[in-house]
Image (tube, rainbow, N blue to C red):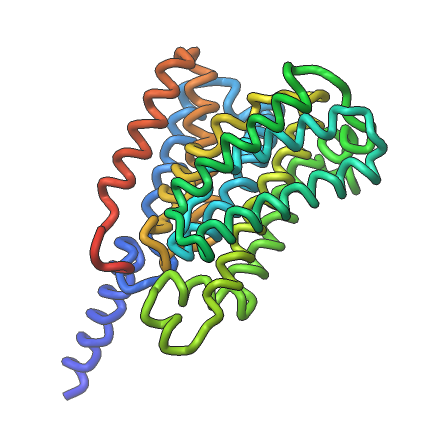
Length: 326
């Protein structure tokens, strides 16, 4: 009688392992396969190029991935509640434009964060109160913010406060600042998404029926999600302003699509209710490794754009439409 029981336990353990790799019955989604792909790509590049494993390239890889991680975290929070934020790229550009106006850092940084809060609130109100589809609402906001950005900074230029430069290019306790940015963003986001009641509400709202069953204040939480998305985008803009040492009205253009691609790659379902922070970070890492590898291999920028588009199309095509989490 004991041996069948032992076999049954092993079978259960194997089925749990299988579900982990296919993302079934988990609100964290499919993140294991992208992790394996990222590791495989890194291993292939390590053998095919001498520069990939160099300390300078690794630091450059982290610095390139940092703003995408910041924007993607905010994008993931919105997607969890069945939303989408196409205005994040414009928020990034606006942030660099404001910071390049030679205002003191104690005025410029609170100013960009206040602007981000206002943009996030407007997005959230448009979606929740006026029932405008998130794509239309945030696409409209993207145009509005981009217009304001062109007014503030018509072309690339200006200079940013020296404190911003240190926050991006300096060291703290011997650790390069881009690494600290990534670690800090992950810790904050982990607390918000996976370590708070608010995070549980995000998943519940995305699940639909659960939110109604437990009487969660959906409107308030959706508003908070859009505000957080804009704030994370503004943080990415602060990082990029320090990295390029100026303002650029077009620097954020790529981040709307790239952040959606990274979030989807990490297993977050665009239908809402399923996703994870670690999956999003893995998705960002995979995109950064692919981009870095193509740069090292001298792949045309036009080809890189096509590859990103194909990745987004493939990931979305593989996501289920009717059943969330299976």
